[in-house]
Structures are given as structure tokens and as C-alpha cells.
Length: 314
Image (cartoon, rainbow, N blue to C red; front, top):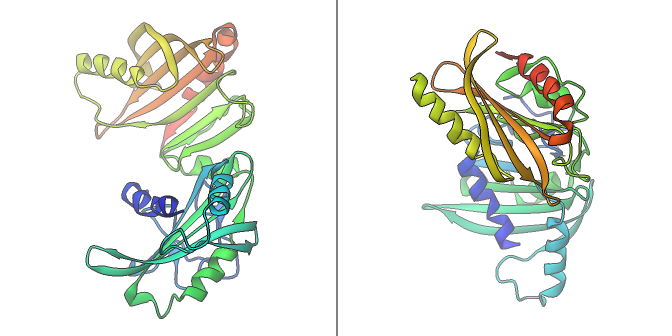
């Protein structure tokens, strides 16, 4: 559990205000885990969660892989009582069911803090995780009892509304082309459209990933190399080879299309992949990736283009 609690410190390094209503469950943008925040906390603009005005209190919410809760539960049962050091895990009941909770003192730099963590089952596909850090200067207002009360209010939802996920993106999305699954990969940064789902897997059917890519060069020749290098970083492809890579206009803007043939997934499915880069300002490009089993490509490609052509800058 100590290792999971450390996710809080790691996540704050990598993290992205509306007043929270004390009596209501609030789900940070794009995720399936929510709580009733303690009074005085507002939704953070720097990470998924809540914080106090002076940033002395931080509440991070996250989704972990589905098996995470079971692994924590098994570890608790396997370790003899008193053998887990200073962190004393506790099984507690919450609004979302049984959860595991820890509280411990820590030091950040030269400052004393109190840290809390909670993990709760969400579904077969995800577990809910909450970590709280309270500066010593805030401890009287945000006591152990207050934090624990907030944590027991945890709630999970099985789906995030499509409109909520789309609204987070830095560009508008006017067309979903009939894709059945819409899933946030990174809040406000990457979105998945798929015909498959988390349980059946997405790689065996057409899917798309929409987002932005930075550090884009200004020169046309350099952009050609950049597009191919970006295509080479697409995860999950094996035996990949670029078949075409050429400049084009996308909605009146400079762009680049790269196509790849590869195999993907546990069944080594032959796939065709297209990557579109639509260049803009500030060395940032809109990046659209579409992947389809090769025998479904002729039907999937027009859908990919329909989604691409429906993307507009905000």
C-alpha cells in the first residue's frame, strides 16, 4: 500500500475553479471517481482533484487498472498484522463499497505533511484511487476525521458522458462517425474513439486517437521527417512499415498524412494505420491516428476522414 500511496507524489509532478458544492459528489473532469469535497476546496486546474486556496491541501483522484484493488486486498491479507511498518491500512465502508484506507505523517522538503490514501473497486476494468496531502499548517481545519469523512463519500460511475469528455479537448469535435466507445486517455489531451470496448479490447476493430503533438518544426522538409518519426512512436504496432508519407491540406491548413502497415494485438491482426498531422501555430499540431484491421479498412477510412474533417480549433 505504501507503493500505491506514493502515486500521489508522482502524479502531482505530471499533473493538468469552480467551487465545489459541499453536499454533492463532484467528479473531476473526465474520470469515473468522485467525492464530496471538504468545505473550502475547489477543483484544481493543475491536476485531477481539489485543493485549498493556499494549496496546502491537495486531493488527487485517479483511475488505476481494474485488478489493483484485488492486489491491494490480497497483500493486506497476506501480510501479518504489525508487519507493514508505520502505515496501518484499514478496511472501511464507503458510498462505493469496501475500501482500503491509510494515513501517515511525511515530510516534503522541510515541511511536515499528513498523507492519506484510499483505493476502492470500480469495475473489472478500473479501480478508484484517492490521495490526500494536508500541510501541517492546515491540519487543524482539515483533521483526520474530516479527511476520512470525505474519503468515505467516494463514488464511482461506470461511464463519463461523451459531451463531458469532448468538452475537455483543446479543439471542438463535431463528428464521432458512429464510434460506439468514447474514452478519455489523458484528460484534456487525448481521446479514444473505438468500435470495441475495454472488455472486448479495441485493437480488433477500427479505432481512433485524437490529440495534440508539440515541438513541431516550421520547415516543410523537417515536418516530413517529424511526421515519420511521430508515426514510428505509435504504440502497439509490430512489424510496422510506412507505405506512404506526404504533405496535404486539411481544412485549409498545412498537414501531413502517413500510412503504416503492421500487425497489432494479441492475435497479431494485420492492420492499416493512418496518422494525420494538422499544423498550426506555436509549434503544435493536431494529431489524428486511425487504425483498422486490414480487411475492414475500406469501410473504416471514410469514417476516419469524417472525424478528422470535423475537428475545429477553439
